[in-house]
Amino acid sequence: MAVLLLALICVLALTIGAGSFHADRAGLLWRYALAWALFAAAAWALHKVPGREAAFLVVAGGIAVTATGLLAPPTTSTDSYRYAWDGRVQAAGVSPYDHAPADPALAPLRDRWLFPEGAGCDGPDRYPIPFRDGARSCTRINRPAVRTIYPPLAEAYFLAVHRLSPAGSRHKPFQIGGALLALGTSLALLTALRPTAPARAAWWAWCPAVPIEAVNNAHVDALGVLLTVIALITVSGHKVRGGLLLGAATAVKLLPAAVAPGMLSGLLSRGGPSGWRRALDASKVLGPALLVVALAYLPYVLASRESVLGYFFGYLNEEGYSDTGGDRRYAVLRLILPGSWALPAALAVLAATALLVLRRGDAHRPWRGALVVTGTAFLVFTPGYSWYALLVVALVALDGRWEWLGIPLAGAISYLSPGAAAYGVAALAVITGFVARGPFSAHGITPRTAAQRRRRAPK
Image (cartoon, rainbow, N blue to C red; front, side, top):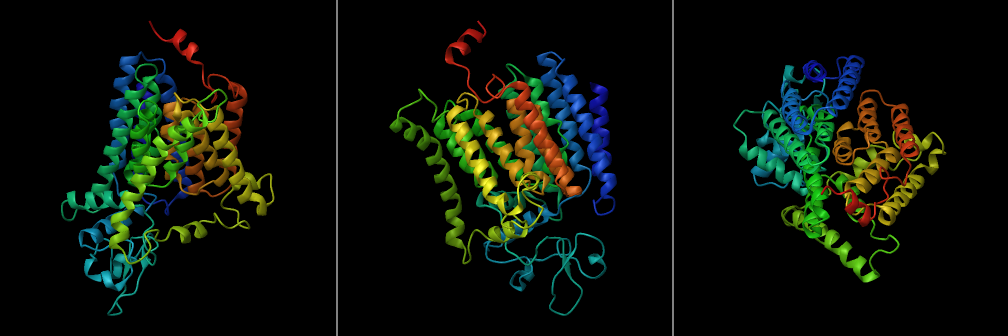
């Protein structure tokens, strides 16, 4: 197992140090595939290690795997440059929702790192922008002509990192922040899983997506994942606290809202609470969540002249989520349905899945329903960016159904080599898992009874 883990660390170091994916996408894809194969083998071997030793290896290996993300500047994404810019803009007392990076009004805040000139504009990941004296000018920030898309607690994180960063530190503070968040998630998972299955925490701690997307590319999704994991661990015993954490996660990145049905698992089950009690239980989770989101947005609403939604709807259109005639989104559904049916079918499948979790989910394992709903959302919408699936990796670690790991792998493959095949294989793996385990077995989403729990509890 140690040999496999060491090999994984070496491959990740070579992958991250190889430079921008513009130079050799095919080579990067093969290195990704090798890293995932080594990860799967190492994680499988770890299950044979006794609990205390497994916990130590999860932490030690997680630190080494995470550290590989710090070896080079961002490799496959430029999003962290927008983070740095938004933090700088806020520190200057300007709302990040009011101006695009290319806006001349913010020209005094530009520096040569984020806004190169002349020969610095050669090479990939440079986006031209107009300059006052006609000199050749560009920026590292993607989509420089549009306003930011990030929710308020993400913006607060960008500001905090900016204020804590030494002058001239460039991309590194956000990578270090991502590493700390990734390690925090590993510890949260290990704490939750240690009594029964500590080795499963390695499914997050050693996963190649974590050093690549959370650390090297420094995606703010890592903060949303950490808050979501703690929310799911907390909500069974403390609904209000879980709701507060869910709201905070959603105010970082909107995707964590998909775990809400899981946090309300079994709310509509037969023999469950009466109607008023259901409403009360739901309000204990959803009320605090909505309150946190509203309070997080309020300071930015008051400080901004423009909409705090920024480029959100433009992004949805640009990425093809509203285009029923395209082929980038809804790739799995398009294999079996006409393109014009894809969007309504996706919404119907997602709604049915959420209802199933609300009726048959396990209230004592809210991450189970959360994984089903979130994973299904990925399979029907087939997003093109691999870092979104960091949330799925953490949910798989909590729940233990490894077949859902095909989704983050499919996301990585689709990002480097767009197409429907990867998500189609991931969907087949999930369906096979349901058939093999039985959808209503202890491995499915049906809860065990309280009596069964008592009988199986250790004396």
